[in-house]
Image (cartoon, rainbow, N blue to C red; front, top):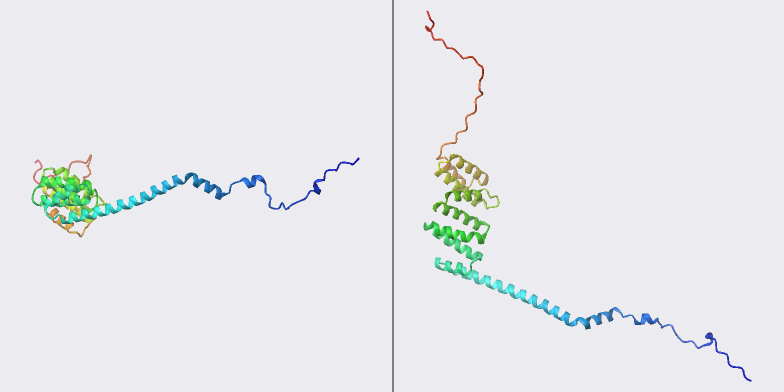
Length: 252
């Protein structure tokens, strides 16, 4: 009776080349390229949409800037073509709120002022100031407005505005000096030597050698000098009265 064959030991099994074998978990893990490809497949429609929006925004901004520049050139051409008062009025009405429209209104206000139409000039300056806000032209409009106020009976308000301009350190010096001169002139008209002197001193700080300062000094010279207050004399107390005896006044 034959004996059963014994199973071969593991060491006796044939062996192969297992150097390139990797664990199952490692073989199944996706690489970065696999993840990127998967993300692209899932989101490429959205990415295309975002890119399209960005491109359209860039194109739209460029078109808007081009149209703005073109419109600005058209406004400048229209302003240059406005040579008469009627044309300036038409231009200002068509481009209300634009800086050039405000300058057109300033020119019209100056024309009205020169023609003695103070109320019309005042209304024109009121249109200019809110648009220009600050800067030399706005300050000049404020001075013109103040003088028009004087001519329309608003003297106190005009003096207040002119003083504010004269004391504004941010305003251009020539315009500050002009405002101070006008206050000096009004003070001379009121025969207020103290106020005129105050403005002359302010002008000496702003522009001592300027034409406005020299004119203000000449105006100030037409008023009497302000006399200083008399010094208080010390009061003498408990001093005996001095008796003066005239010759022959004694009783005989």
